[in-house]
Length: 263
Ligand code: T3D
Image 1 (cartoon, rainbow, N blue to C red):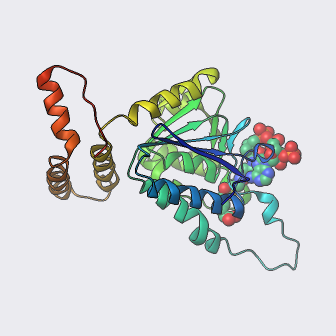
Image 2 (image 1 turned 60 degrees about the horizontal axis):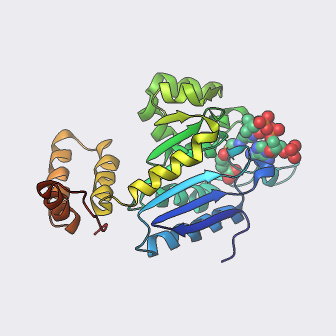
Image 3 (image 1 turned 135 degrees about the vertical axis):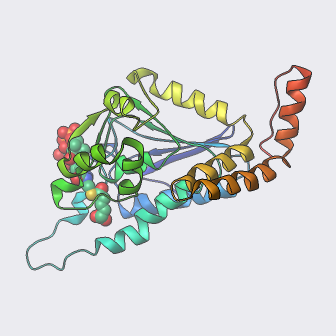
């Protein structure tokens, strides 16, 4: 598939996805969804990928759904937005969360609506100091989607999540970092360098072990402590059989840097 609304490359163990409709602040269209789905399929099929970096081209990260595609005149049939979530947004969020390697999001500018919640579906979020996050849905009569009603209360607590979703106020990157909504806020000109360095580092780490950590973290919100202890036991059983675990222990005992293969 040729990509027109995203850029996609795989190099040195890192897959980089760049949302690329800068004139429309990288808002989502059906085409962008299908290109993202195709790229994520390629990431899943490529054993060489050990970290993913998601970012946006231009001055915005992503302004959510392209509202130009939602213009309705009186008398027109209402669009079936549930269908849109079921066919496009939900599979996107599910497939991102299920990727078996760390997904870093570098939020380069405004992240609004589904754009903000796409970022929160990633594992580690860095944002440029000039970036911001807006739960824009309430301003047009919609419900926050793309997993936002699940992720945001867990990131910032229900009091802040409720106010953000009911008021639609803009949160600066610094505030987002202070509230624990994201990992870190960095100077604008350092964002990509820092995000790329993090992705390059993660691409040399024990990928299988990191994917098991992701599984434990994803399960933690719905499991009891007992269930989580059982899950940790099961995942550690798998981790203990990996070549990277053997290499990590050997390297420690040999007092040298480990050479992980991701297996
Ligand atoms: O529909 C479904 O399938 C259900 C799923 C819904 C998911 C959702 O995401 S719903 C929420 C949709 N998004 C929004 O409501 C956000 C709309 N955008 C904004 O509120 C503002 O643009 C921002 C706060 C994000 C940024 O403001 P600002 O002042 O920095 O930029 P701007 O001037 O408003 O936007 C720049 C250009 O991008 C402008 O185009 P122009 O006039 O230069 O040709 C603007 O129209 C365009 N743009 C921004 N957001 C969207 C958009 N075009 C289409 N759709 C957008 N969402």
